[in-house]
Image (cartoon, rainbow, N blue to C red; front, side):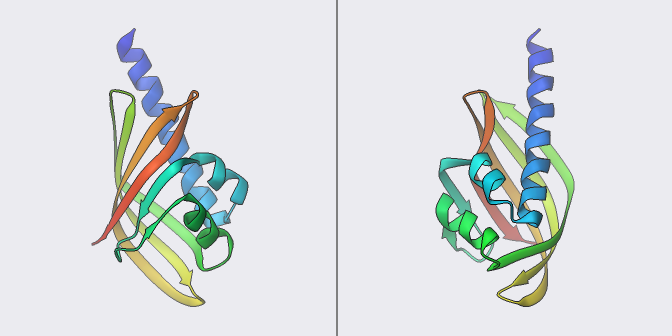
Length: 127
């Protein structure tokens, strides 16, 4: 039974990652605010750190406007109720009105809160 629960958690976490990816493209404030933990620590490949408010504002104000995001080589691991997701991200972004392509390695840390996966931390690095 524990193996089934683990596989189910991996499926729901993978679905949360996809919801997060799409919300970043859409700039969907309600979904971004819901999926992010209150204590979110969001690290960019540039070294900039954001809390939940700054992260949501950047994606919903047009400051960081993702046109497309492709994820590859994704791995999902759950350890004591904490989800660790690693993947490569290639994104087309209009950053401050300038078109750019980003190629990143990303680590996402998710925590189950009240039965839902919440993004607790993210750290990206340039590939």
